[in-house]
Structures are given as C-alpha cells and as structure tokens.
Amino acid sequence: MYILGIETSCDETSAAVIEAKGRSCRILSDVVASQIETHRLYGGVVPEIASRAHIEAISAVTREALDGAAVPLSEIGAVAVTAYPGLIGALLVGVNFAKSLAFANNIPLVPVNHIKAHTAAAYFVDPALTPPFLALVVSGGHTALFDVTSDTAFHLIGTTRDDAAGEAFDKIARVMGMPYPGGVAMDALAREGNPHAIHLPSPALTGEKLDFSFSGLKTAALNFMHQKEMRGEEIPRADLAASFTEAVVSGIAEKTAEALDRTGYGTLVLAGGVAANSHLRARLTDLLAARGGKCIVPPPSLCGDNGAMVAAAGYFAYLAGERAGCELNAAAEDEPFPTAAR
Ligand code: KG4
Ligand code: ZN
Image (cartoon, rainbow, N blue to C red; front, side, top):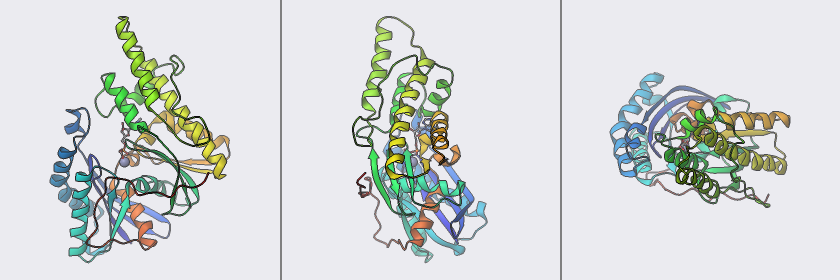
C-alpha cells in the first residue's frame, strides 16, 4: 500500500510517499522544505514564524511529494501525520491539513508520535529489523532510551532530566559563534581537536537509572569559555568542540551499554537529528560490533525531521489498527510512555 506522511512538528515542512508491503518500506518521494535559514536570523526556532511558514509551504510540499512519487491521491491507503510532541502551532498546521485531505478523500487518518517516527526511519535501512530492540532517540528535543517490544509499543527506560543532547550542542555552538543549528558545525570542528584536552563532566547520571543530565556539562563548557575570556586567553575552539563531543558521546554510550545489558538485546536503533553526528554513529556502531550485535542508524538525510519516517511509523500504526477521526488534535507534550522496570 501507499502511505502519505506529513511532518510539521518543528522547523521542517515535509511530505513523503512510501510503498509498504509486509515489513518492507520503500521511499518513493520525500520532500523537505527547511525553515532553518529564516530561524537562523534569531539564533533558534521562533514558534509563530514556524507555524506561518508551514501554512505557506504545506500544500506545495504535499503536491510535490505526490507528483514525485507518481502516485495519485486516490491510490493513497493512509495519511499519517505527526500529531505530537512538538511546537503546538506548528503541529496544528500539519494535523489540520492531513485531516482535511484524509476526510475529503475518504482515506484513513493515522496519528503518529514524532519519536516513534524517528525510530521508524530504521525500517528503510534494514527491512529485517523486527522488535524487540533498544532505541536511542537523540534530537533537539529528546535524549531517550526505549525498550521497543513491538512496532508500536515503546517503553521508556531512560531519559534526560533537563536539556536534550541536540539542545546542548546548539547552545555551546551558539556561544562559540556558530550559526544555528550548531550541531553540524560542532561535528566538523570536533574532528580537528583533541577529545581529551579539556576535562568536562559526563552527562550520564550515576546510579541505577539510565538517565542523563546535560546542564552540568553545558555549564562547565560555558565556565571554561568565560575563564579563558577573563584571562584574555584564546579559546581552543577545536579542542573544546572535541572534548564536549567526547563527553556527550561517552555519556550516551555508557548508558546505552547499560541498557543493552539490562534488556539483553543485540540490536540498537540510533535515531533523531543528533544521530547524524559522525562521532556518535562511530562510537555506537563500534560498541554494538564489540558485543556481537548491530547498530542500525539511518543515513544523515533520514535522521533529521522528514515525512518518510512519519509514513513508516504510520504504516505500522495502521497495521496495528490505529486510526483517528475528525476530532484529532495536536499535543505539544509527549504521550505518557509506559516505563519498563529495568
Ligand atoms: O530530530 P531533529 O531534526 O529535530 C527535533 O526533533 O528536535 O534534531 C535537530 C537537532 C539539532 O539540535 C541539531 O543541531 C542536531 O539535531 N544535529 C546534530 C547534527 N546534525 C543535526 N547534532 C550533532 N551533530 C550533528 N551532525
Ligand atoms: Zn525530530
């Protein structure tokens, strides 16, 4: 069947058409209209500007996705849309658009959780991927470990107590003078520095829980920069980027290893915008290989927000019987994931 996926939770307006059969998902089109250039002027996403830009772009982006796939609307078997979590005004644009399209054309409507959608991007990489597996979602809004027991059942086993990894990267990058979002520039600069030059605290919280905290690491990096400035010394930018990245990557790898021990799983899905980070991809791929398991990580183009991942998550939700009616609403907050006792 063909599924149309629509994504407007943050600063990318995206629509995609995929073809799904059995457990296999294939992308026929995936159109992403990014608003990054607009938000860059303000150093971060401005919610109202994001909503307005989604309204302007959504019809043309969807038309382009259908034309690019050469699939008429009459052959679309389900419309999947990100309904939560995200910026509420931005989500409402996609949800309203998808609702109108679905009900005017008698197509089933499937609401999708954005975090599950990031994870579902892995189905494009490995058609043999079958739960249970461990999912690590690292993005601008999340840093979370999930015990995925079926294509649609996610149990939260670890999360950040404050900032997300992407937020921390973006904040430090901004203070270092890099354009928003700074994650990509930090990734490149980190390759030129010494990851052990500056000692910074780990974001992995000590203790039983599989939780993270990025605020201490962020403050330590900011203090390091202030001290250098006060002494009139130059900030060793490459070493700072490398050491900061090392702290983030090691902390995440430590808790991921613990989560693999506790679940006994040999498969990790690494997903979300920060999964595009070359250092994190390499470390977790090595970690899984050393344990005789495998790390499935989508190509960088599918790590950021896109409609194809929403369509894939929508397909499995559709198979599980999930549908929405005209009353479907968006929600800024996450769904209350059941927490597994680990
Ligand atoms: O998943 P995403 O596109 O949007 C959210 O759902 O939040 O993630 C965006 C985040 C931003 O914080 C961005 O800086 C970060 O992903 N990011 C990276 C890299 N590419 C994108 N962070 C580190 N290294 C990268 N290569
Ligand atoms: Zn995202």
